[in-house]
Length: 249
Image 1 (tube, helix red, strand yellow):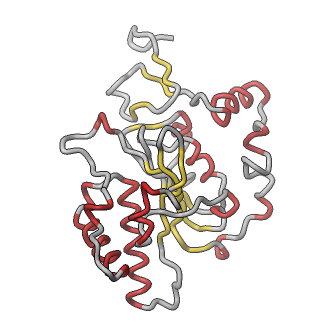
Image 2 (cartoon, rainbow, N blue to C red; image 1 turned 90 degrees about the vertical axis):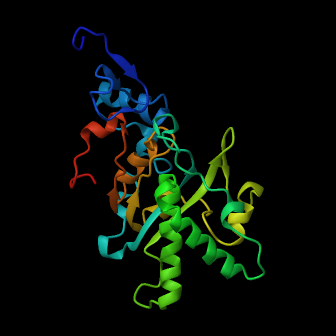
Image 3 (cartoon, rainbow, N blue to C red; image 1 turned 180 degrees about the vertical axis):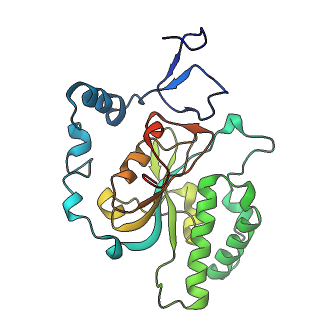
């Protein structure tokens, strides 16, 4: 088929959400086993591929063990990779990826260093990359619990942290020299979490990464019993065409 006399461009990845930007660009499943292969399997056999339905990669076998809504932890949870965000589409100056040395100053009291860094990050909030904005919200949630000695909500309302960063491949942040300054004061870094661990939480968010979306992350969160807060950005993936506000997120 043609669109306005122009052959379609099949985009096996993220594409512009606004159809007027590139009218003949069509989003297709990403070249990944959980996307292209599984979508082909579903189109051919009408069943979910084993990679999504087995106990290791999918949620079908775990669904009957999911907690009920009122038993889920009332926290916005996120673990992911410290990526950039739509670099080529940003205006100038572009969004900031904060350097630890610009925000954390050497002083003997670790708690004071942490609080000062959180205040400085807040001042730069509107200029930060989306995933770093989530880090700021999480750190402020910790400050809120500690400052007001909240007993009815002992856990912070948000727990969003980087479990990895990209250096040719995904590398854990915890214990890595690249993030040691952040880790020392307890900001930004966190251990990775399995899908089973994430499914114990009530609220999820699929923060967009380099291409503006999070690919597999959105699918995984849709399979969980909690509520997904979907990050709408200038780009979208093939699955977004089927997502309906207030129904799926």
